[in-house]
Image 1 (cartoon, rainbow, N blue to C red):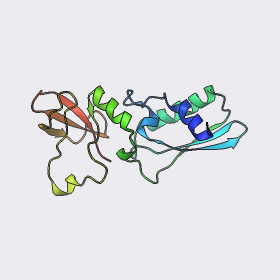
Image 2: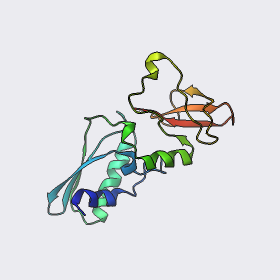
Image 3: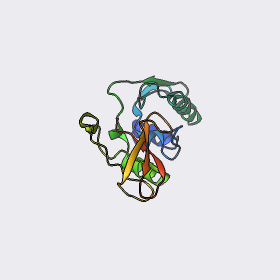
Length: 162
């Protein structure tokens, strides 16, 4: 196994601090690793959006996990370009989000419904109805919007396309 995949395997069980049903690897924030020699490592991570409060916890978790696995010096570098996109979510992460009750992004970041003003049809993660309505642009976290299903009457978060 190459160095990059070895490190990803180590980091693969670190949960997202805000959505613990998915990992930071599945979230797609790990953008690179560099072997600095002598069991020293640099990990590049990209924030899901500017000012995401979970990034410090992710950084701390990466450092802790890698040190537990024999790395001496662990540096975490924030990489802002290219900007994180929901296109980087793994298909497994999208399925886990849905099973957890959060509607995963239904489109790629090329979704331009906000320009046309046309309402987005978001599938309810509970009953699978598309008869849903936006309640608020912000849900439990800034990266999610709050929707309500008009069929089962349940509210749910939608992971916005970013």
